[in-house]
View 1 (cartoon, rainbow, N blue to C red):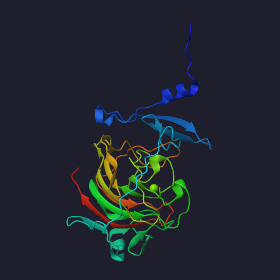
View 2: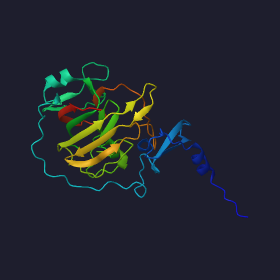
View 3: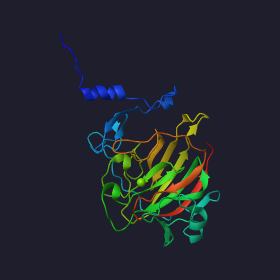
View 4: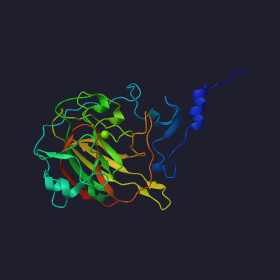
Length: 287
Ligand code: MG
């Protein structure tokens, strides 16, 4: 009689696989997320995560193909804020100091250079003094003209909605990295539909429509966040339902949703590269 014997690693994966989000509502049950815990080189437990069968931060392009490269249209005059927007940065020192702080509420170490807000290594994230939830956000960014580093080390920053959910900023012009970590990705969760990056030093735009996650009184998530993102005017996230947190938790891992207030500051990431931002405005939306 033929007996099936599963490889122990497979058995362990099946046994430890956990559907992390299952709330009895169909739209919350997708995508399928499974996990397995493995020891890293230091013997520490690392939670490896698979979304729809693909490892988070997968580098193997046969398993996670890179988004197609699309040349953006020629840049025109940038969008000035519409009349009902809250202008968060208009290029002035005044806006930088009145609207933004470091993560402790003190003046930020980021600097204003030629009308742009520039990340300073070691200064930490910069965040708005005011808090926001669901919103439409316009932000322009440029990776450093001088190309340094590779992969995640080349022009890395990020736009953090509610100080928590990262739309990745990275110089992905001829700079491959794992697709869920490239420009326009919801970091570690969803790769962009296409790679529409401009060259280093050139101004690029994000237009983001974000609906915040909703938690019940016990802290359980009852509605996931959604993102629609246009990068240089091209759709890269099409009403994407964010399947969990976007924090770096180690290779092939990701963080989970954790309950938080309905409004939190908008933050920009200091990842050690002098990425610049300008023309930042926001319109609050109903949940
Ligand atoms: Mg980043």
